[in-house]
Length: 462
Image: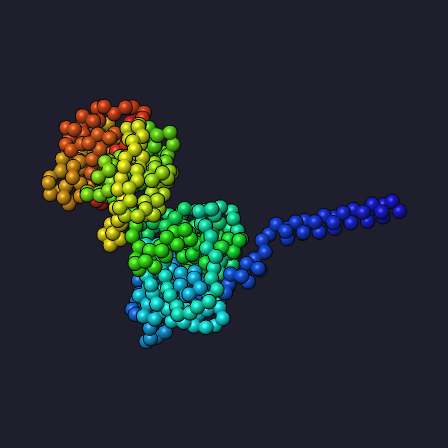
C-alpha cells in the first residue's frame, strides 16, 4: 500500500512539475498575435515595373557576393519585369517608406494596401547610400505604424518582421536582435549602422518593417547574408532612427546630404595599437587625408587615430562613417585624435559628402637578404612614378628578403611613406630612420599599395 501511495505521489509531482515547466515556457515566450493584428494593416506590398529590364541584375551585381538585397523578381519573356517588395505607411495621408532598390528606376509603382485596394505611387525621393525611398499615394485616413527608437534597441531583444516573401502577403517572422552597428561592404561607403537579426527574411521582404514587442518600428529589412541564395540566419535592417532622418530630408528637398570628413581609415588591430603606444585596439587610424577636405583644414594627419567625433566615442573604425554621416554639412564640432602618445582635440567644420566621387574612406619576393633591419630593398621614385603610384613622397620597395618586412606582408611595389611616424623620401632618410628603430617594440609603417594607403605594424626582434 505504501509503495503504491509513493508511486502515485511521485507520478503526481512529476506531472505537476511538467505542467509547471510548460506553463513557465508559455509565459516566457512572447505572444505576437495582438501585435500582428494592430500592426499589419499599415504594411503594404509594392510592385515596381522597371524602365530598364537589366536594372534588377545590375542592382544585384553591385551588392557583395555574400549579401543579397531581396525583392521578388518576376521575369516575363519579352515584357518589362516587375519586382515586388514591401513597405509601410508612416502617415495617414499616404507616405510610404521602403527600400531604394525595390523601386529603383521604376516606370510605375503600385502600392497594395492590406484591404486589397491598390494605388499608384509617386516617388518623392530616394537615397541610394542608405537604400531608402519615400513614396506617396493619394489616400487619406490610412492606418500607420508607430515609430520606435533603434538607439534604445538591445541585443537579445525579440523583434518581428512583416512582409511579402515570395509574394505571400503579410507573412510574419520573428527572432532576436543578434548585433547592432554592423558595417557592411558597399560601393558607397559604410554609412548605415545595420541591425543584425536572425529573423527569416526572403525575396519580397525588402522594405518591410521590423517591430519590437511594443509594436513600434525599429528598422527596415534590407539585406541578408547568404551562400545559398536563401535565408541562412543573418538578416540586416536599417535603423529607424537613421531612416527618419532620411525621410525628413526627402520630404523637404527630395534628396539627402551627409557629413563628410575627408579621410581614409583602417581598423586598429592589436599590433598597430602596440606600435602607436595605445593601451587597447580602438579608434579609426587615418591612412590618408584628402586635399582641401574638412580634415585637412582641421589639421588631421596621416597616422592620427580618431577616438572621438562630435562627442561620440569611436571604438571601431567602422563607427566613424556612421557618426560623421549624421552631421549636417556646414555644422561645426570637434574630434579627438591620439597622436604621438597624446590626445589632441581639433575643431572641425563638417563638409558634404559627394556620393558620385568621394570614397570614405601583390608583388613578388626575393629570398636574398638585404642590409637593413627590415629586410627590404628600396629605391627613390621618379616624379613620374610618384604620379603613377599616387604617392607624393616615399621610397619604392624593389626587394623583400627574410625579416620583419616579409613577416608584415610588405611586398615588391609597395611605397613606404613613413616609419615610426617619420617621413622618408629617399634611401638616405630610409636608412637613417632604420638605425633609430627600437628592438622588440612594434612600430607603425605607412605604405601605399595599389594607390591605397594603409598602416602595418612591424617589430625588429634583434
